[in-house]
Each structure stands twice: as C-alpha cells, then as structure tokens.
Length: 166
Image (cartoon, rainbow, N blue to C red; front, side, top):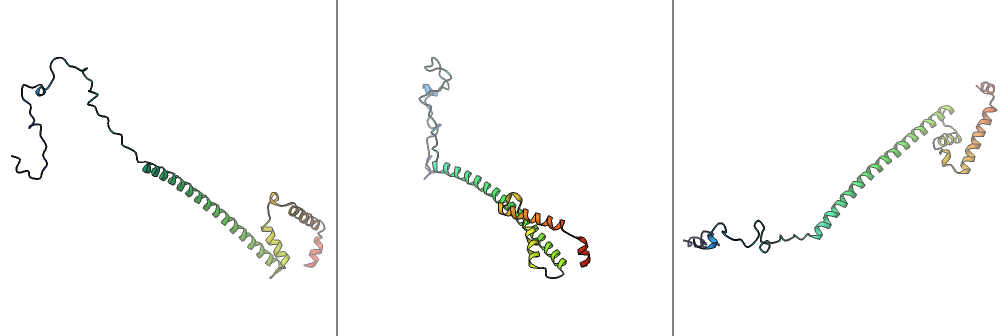
C-alpha cells in the first residue's frame, strides 16, 4: 500500500513500529524495581527551552518611539500655552488700541475738529504709560514732575476766569 502516495513524505507511524508483545517496551508501566526516584523527570532527557535573542535594534527603536511620543506631547502643551499667551497679548493690544481711539475721539470732540499735536501726544501717552516699578529713574522723575505740574495748575485754577471765557 504506499504506492498511491507518490511525492508525499511519509513518516513511520507508531502502528508501524509495534514492538513484540514479550518485550519490555510494550508494557505500559514498568514493573518491579525502578532505578530512578519516582515522580522526578530524567534531567538528561529534559531539554532547556532556547532563549529567544532580543533584537537590540527593535528595543532601541521602541524606546526612541516612546521618547518621541513624550516629546510630541510636551510640544503640544507648549504650543497650546504659546497660543494662549499670544491670544492674551492680542487682546491686550486690542484693548489698548480701543482706549487710544476713544481718547483721540474725546480730544477731537474737545477741540472741535483737529486737536493740537501736543494734546494728541498726551492722549496717546496716557494709554502707553508704564507701571511705576518698570520706569527708569529719569522716567519716574519726569512722571512725578508732571504730577506736580498738574497739582500746581489745579491749585492755581481760577474757575471764574474760565466762566468768563465761555
């Protein structure tokens, strides 16, 4: 019978290798004295599983991908923070420009048309005023002098003189 299996590799089946009935290998269990300790495997027959070598290139690449992912997340947070900062700056500039336009309009209404350049410069300077802590000593002295000049002007103000002008 094996003539019909042309080109097929066949192996010896256990049925083909049936030992003789009287031999020791045919018995399902060993009977009598056992040379080794019962329950333990034969260490000579036991084969160790080969350890798969890890591919260093793949492990380094995986580590690099994790670092890249962390870096991208940090960059996204920074871009979000920068966008928020840019939006705040834009809003502050927009507010400053609106204030400046309002002051120029008030100045135009006050002078009835084209106001003098000095009045416009004062209106614009009022919008761009630095906080006191950011001023240099010269700017601070000039600011205090302007304040003193303004107080002197108010003290010397004669309301009746203005009423006569109207």
